[in-house]
Length: 367
Ligand code: IPM
Ligand code: MN
Image (cartoon, rainbow, N blue to C red; front, side, top):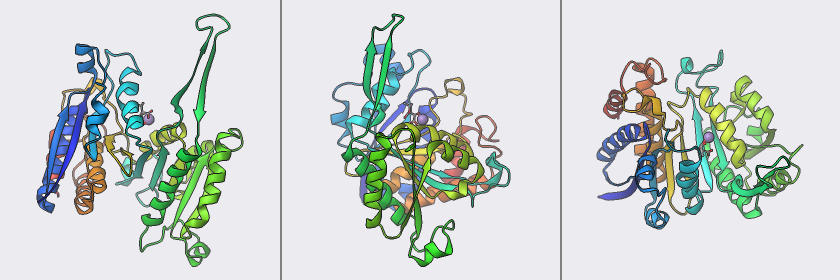
């Protein structure tokens, strides 16, 4: 029997609770589709840091590198200053394991969960490909005269040709595969006639960030013709935010830098039904990838069995898909759609009509 070794970092707050449900659902899918999952648990997170003073042992990335996938519940602890765990665990692993893509599917499963009037599942179904290793997140910068009245703080956005190009390449390839057999409904008849099947939008700020997005724009223009079936488009990041609310159906695949990607994906989470369902993958296509629900550690809900585990379950589905278990991944997603449409009152914590564990059980039973 085929088997996959997966590292599990439950992490802080509600992280372990939602992780438990995700693993439970993955186990059921594994049984049904005939493969085995071997979980290896790691205790990285705020509690361990408070006990030992160590955020992540230096051996962590070399050890985690042995796995093709990591499942991460959440990082962020009320007794630990902001930034320590986020930078010391999440960002460090993203960088050291070269997870250069942050992949965020944005799919609405049920119209009532969308806060936009008259928008339903047919309008909200896109993917954001966020660059995950560079930009403002690279940590370049510093202070001059810190604490004095003439203090200077500099934070630079790093955009390398290699980093930008590999991200764009990933986005183009994803777009090319995305609507296999059935062209994206947002295409115009003349696009379809010209052989286009899907659309990739570069989201940037070429009118102001004239260095960084000049590089992105040139690389995008150069790669475009290699992907004949992909219609290319461009939108400024501010306009992207406007259109997410006004016309989300205008988007199919979006590619953008690290900071813009961080911001627009939280807005996107809201139009897909909230953080209770939003999942993402930190992808190294050739190495170790890490899958996580987007909701964070939600300390105030910890241990109450009220947090929505669907985001974590969706992250599990993405992970199985990444591991090559596409049928299992799709079966989990179908089960989630079914449970949301037949059982769940609201996707918000404490308002689901069921507890965290019960939602996990419902999805597991629907596989
Ligand atoms: C995300 C998160 C992280 C980010 C934080 C926790 C560092 O907001 O995955 O989007 O900014 O990338
Ligand atoms: Mn974010």
